[in-house]
Image 1 (cartoon, rainbow, N blue to C red):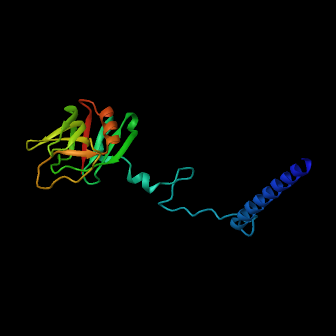
Image 2 (cartoon, rainbow, N blue to C red; image 1 turned 90 degrees about the vertical axis):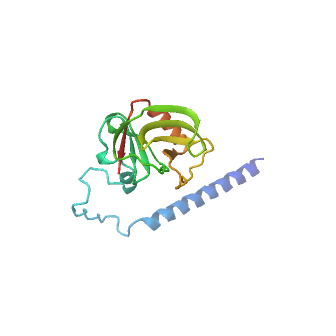
Image 3 (spheres, rainbow, N blue to C red; image 1 turned 135 degrees about the horizontal axis):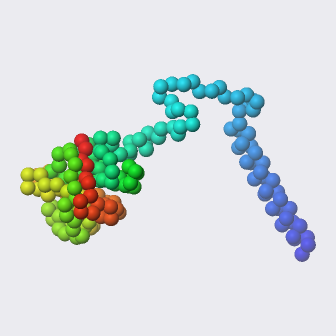
Length: 188
């Protein structure tokens, strides 16, 4: 029994040494030739972040709440970006998501949530949930909603509809966030 145990230990030791050797090889392959050399300090440029500042993340900047959307707790809807931001206290974005616009659009401006419905048929015949209405344009009610079947299809361009569709999880978040009287800011 002692003989098989020593063979097992020897095998484990050999495997561990091989793994350490492989990791050492990987580390040496990425190390600079002269470890004593220091990298030159980067030159200052007008686009470089200030010392100590976090570098700008282009993806995060693209998802940042539009500057022209005001302040305070609000829902921000960008017509051009087809995106919604739920903005909480201290201008903190709690959620942002893409939406499918309706065929009827509200003009840029500030609105308030006027009514809500849990589950109703949409004006396009699709069963929808978490309807949050905030505007009326030429007799068409405009609001956010999610299709119960989870679809996010483009609206029929020949029909005048006001439903701004989102995914169900985003609809859940909107429903929780946007109660009656919550500010809704529409930006271009």
